[in-house]
Image (cartoon, rainbow, N blue to C red; front, side, top):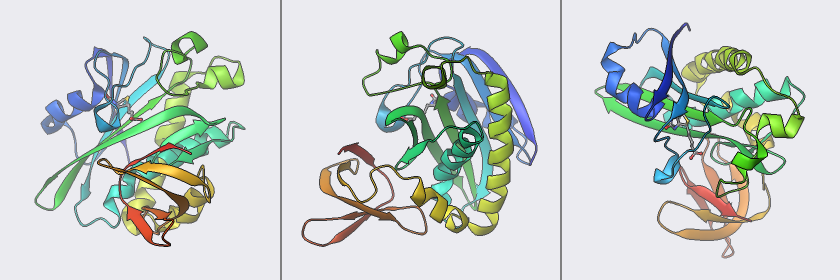
Length: 243
Ligand code: BTN
């Protein structure tokens, strides 16, 4: 699938920009909105997403899917897996903290925020990703969780444009397969990349916390948590808080 690229210097959030301007976008393409700086970057669960000017990649991909697309809500995993492919091609060894944080050395490198608006049989997908590319350690230390950047991990400055182009290429290929077959073709790869698999975790489902063992990922991308009472709980959304 082809891309339409929109570059913004400063914006509140590429997600908000995309939602405001959605009627102007060509639905036969993927619209790729990037910004050098966001004044109100958004994370999951209403958290903020911080990034210094120009150092990192902040992207919203907008495209449409049919509402009956198989495993529609696992589209976030597809972007995570795409970034991981690009990083592995650069000799890095990233892992996924479910649902879609991309981690290097147990620290967060990238976060994904997916917002879906449905109308009739069409779903507008606003798939946002923030990647710490060239952020330095001083900035990363100001974030309230352990975070890293490609520059900190590899001790070199990365070409953001090149990284973006590679990500677009892999993502569009994966999106094509996802549209045809859903999450299934990605399931095994995704599960093998999972951080904390088989380990005891604290999981937040958006309302309450559960302590259990991260058992597996179901074939549609949900998280299976094995509870002390031997019950298996399955979650479509939430966050791993700690081990
Ligand atoms: C998370 O880990 O909580 C998700 C973070 C998503 C951040 C990206 S940066 C580009 C896009 N615009 C935003 O305001 N948020 C996403």
